[in-house]
Length: 443
Image 1 (cartoon, one colour):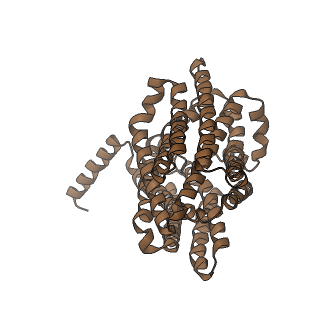
Image 2: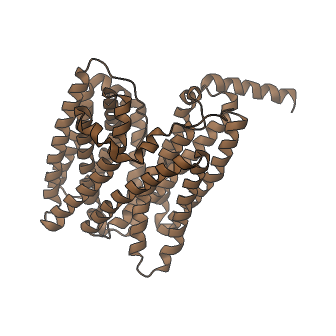
């Protein structure tokens, strides 16, 4: 290499070090991690609209049954995962997890066209994509904690997280633009290839960990993942703590609203073809994720400071309440899609970060014990119960979209009132117990 090239490389290294705080020996690993999370998020958001497009062909009772099944499968998979990471080196677990999901989606691509009536296979795919959503991000961030030191993570994790945001924006564009031309099975194949390409990148990352990051002895703290394997042990922590109980109720009401909007969306899209549904749903994901990125960048950090926690937490619930009231009198697809985008973008960018701040009112030990119960029972169990309630209202009692929207508006009102209560308690607290990271995004 000539002296001129060496000089240019030195100048570039100094610029990168000063401008984005990534040291020269960390640059390859940071860019590689950016690419990995980009591919994981893009693959998931290719699969998601394919999955949800299938649901419109099934009755509310059928989808409700699948959601109940998801609860038990999710609990079992999380328990098995906790057992695996306690027995195997985490270095072996990461490529194993992503290889297994990649091969499973490849199998769905190959098997689905072989059936004249692939309904059962499609329902398995529906449940399996939901299982994948439990792991694709959480395993990645455990992998990052196993790769970068605490000091390095403070400088590089924000850059890496941007890769996830980019993948969440680019991924939905593929089904939105190409679902009709490629077909849904081909989208499964594209996602499977994307996941399979992640595996050699993961293996190369471990090489960089030793050769360039010099973190050979570093191991991730997998306490939370191991606790999730015994998620039921956290019930006592929630039952004996008013703050955790109120937070759990707040999240449960959010889940109920999300379920009601999802089922109404499913039913209104039933008149469209699967390809058209996939394009519409991919478009919703693209708009939602783009809005989330912009809101998080320009709005999220300012709301709590300017409005206070009570108003910030209650903002989305009361907007959703108003949207459901409008939907009750104008039950058309455009209103519902606008409501769905508002709900999801508002949750990711406003409600969730504010909600995570509430956990600073409890100790780290209580938080660790409660989180698995919230992730498994409140979220997945809430899906199962709320799906059954919707099926009872729609097919059992014969309520139409307008009547169910009014019920949903009532639930949103209770959700908003609880948000005000939690927010006022937080604003009135003298000081939080300890800081907590609120940048985690729910895919």
